[in-house]
Image 1: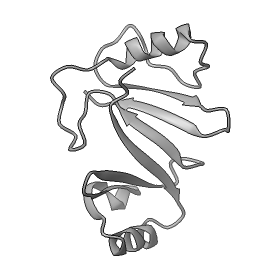
Image 2: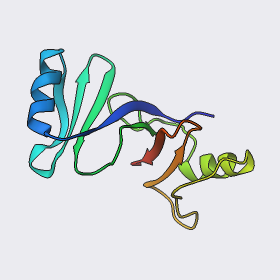
Image 3: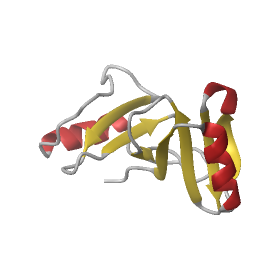
Length: 123
């Protein structure tokens, strides 16, 4: 199962303080909008998202259809196909992609330890 590009999405209390901290670790803003309380930071091939007031907990994020630079992959497994595979394996979905659509969609699952996992397809 190919889930796409991986990043960690951090639920932060103060996006400015978190940005300053991660910049000291060598991360640079790569996307997002601090005025909207979300930023994407990169350090080499490592990507983290900072989200203030959007998520209750930190979560693992996968982006089907993207490489680490948010370029569309020539071939990838659509999120609806991933959703069907997860269902077939008995994985409970907290939120689902609408299977009557195509293009961007998302779904969410939780691992056995309560860690949320977001599959967020932008293409």
